[in-house]
Length: 110
Image: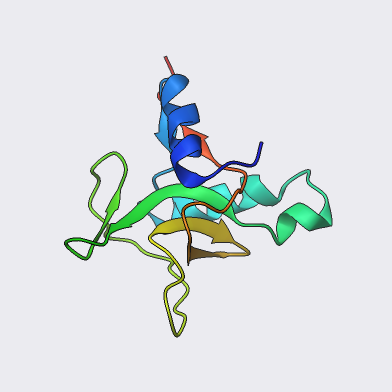
């Protein structure tokens, strides 16, 4: 399913989770491998929403669950293209929140 960032957030929350929060290089590698496994070539180059966003009013980047942004894999570009983030290739990229992309959720195992 391809949806804007806020709809992806709602979909994850309706399942008892949230958009993926990545706090270590190991988690990042796991999610990238998961994203890349068993999909066609078109999906390998597509952006997938994760739970990172920038509050533009206070210029702070945060995870949707409140986790501190310590580890980062943000691809530096000349100009940020939006306050919401996704994984594209093997890095995180900023994108406009209204773009429709697939998404990655996480939730507790219970």
